[in-house]
Image 1 (cartoon, rainbow, N blue to C red):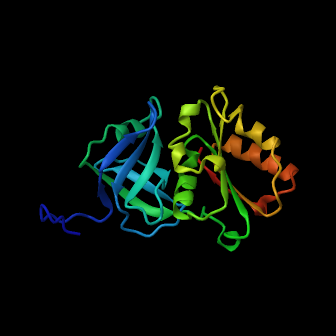
Image 2 (image 1 turned 180 degrees about the horizontal axis):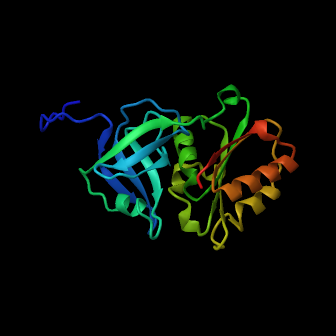
Length: 225
């Protein structure tokens, strides 16, 4: 691809940083130009900083046909990669490979089932993409965080379709872990479940859903760490 302003040949896997949107002190959205590849909501990319030898995988945060390609990042204190991402400036280049993965909305049950998205922390990223990509979807997001302000861009979800569970904050919809909230809820048989976040939360949630009569074929998972 030729950069029209400079006339320089640019490898299509490189994207210029357009913006960095801070959501909390250590969580941000990295905004890149519109994707040059087709992806399905729920998939992830491999991201590297141009000239750096390391890369990390991030779920795509933006809608399938969004005006920009976006990822949701939490800066890891003492980490190598995420602090470098946070200090990127507009116009700097990152290297993108992908998309990867098969995590996504169950197409065969798209209109016949309710879709329950269960996320911890930045594990909400693929669900943000799904909600933005399927505006008529019958969904509910159950988001587990430590503090209520970590309910990232909550206005992007319909108010009656988002439940924020905060383990260290009473200013949320539910004060406690999301797994504690799951135990209190009854779900209809026509429900598809999607879980994304840390492995302990995923395994605990799957056990709770199994006790409620939903086996593995009803549950799609994406493990972050």
